[in-house]
Length: 451
Image 1 (cartoon, rainbow, N blue to C red):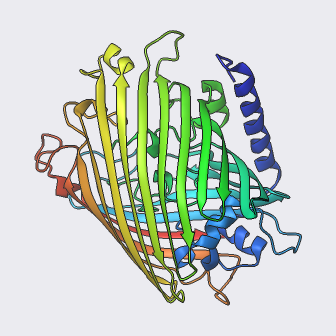
Image 2 (cartoon, one colour):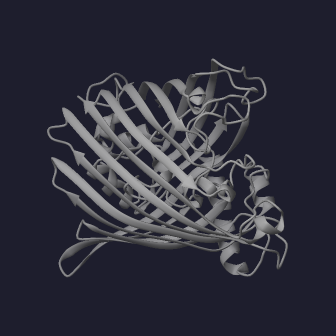
């Protein structure tokens, strides 16, 4: 890994990442079903509707505790796998195939196949680490990673959990799974239109291409605080992890993450309210002294869950992120006309689940900003303003007590429809060829299984 202004810190992060990759290669392990086997609980104990990523209060505390809670029975490998297959249809044929080998419409594909190391590694130490084969891009790489150590103690007679997380995507370590990385819809089409082409930096702008270390505390089972920092992976390290350098964001510096949240668990209902922020400077050309783009993200999020007796469950989630941009590197490269800009993201979704088997979800999203904020997927003079609605119906037959193959496998079958009111600033013309925003409406049928 290339050394720079913080050589010792980056060196130890690189060594930790290398150790993790070695562990991944050396020992197979299991994802969501592996957690169920480890704890002796069913999938519904941790997840609303018996399938991730929405967490119940028990799931929140399991993650806070470092994925290390166990039923005391040994001999359980933290190994799991996941497959996602789908069919995608857009309202109007796309002008060009979305990827090589695909058709203009009605595409069927194996979206991804993943191997997980997920579970307890030692006392107070656990992990959620995903290695993914992208069936659309035909590549394999280290995907999401969260390795954490957690210690339980007390302060003034009240419970206190202290922990650290080594992760590769700001927000993936969030214990409430309400950050953008876990946002609705939880699975989406890679061959259609599944949302805005651009997003705030904290919404996937650096995922997999950085490495961060954060520390957190959870006090009195209600107050949460987290603080940490991130650095970029060198091009050499990205190549070794099979990430490819085409999506390399550049040299990342002064990247700080913070999170505050209030959480309440009343058994039949639970809710949380939080604030978060992320600041980073990115130097795309990686040249010493070159111009940088600066990003300042601030967000608010909240969640309400009615759990009842677990027969009828209702969840409401929402978030708002505001991003301020200083685009010196973009201006220097002729990619932007203005040095300052903004981007705003709003997400609201509600879901209903019956008998933790049948689910209905409805979500509304809106991204607005100025033209130069099209940082990921620029399309010339258009602005990123995109608004739409996502509807999903799904069936999760397993994941409950005495269900077939529990706790060895889980399955979700779903139908999802994304309808656009606006796409990249246009209501009628999107690409100058008469394509309306509604022409990008996408029907997505999927089968999502873990084992």
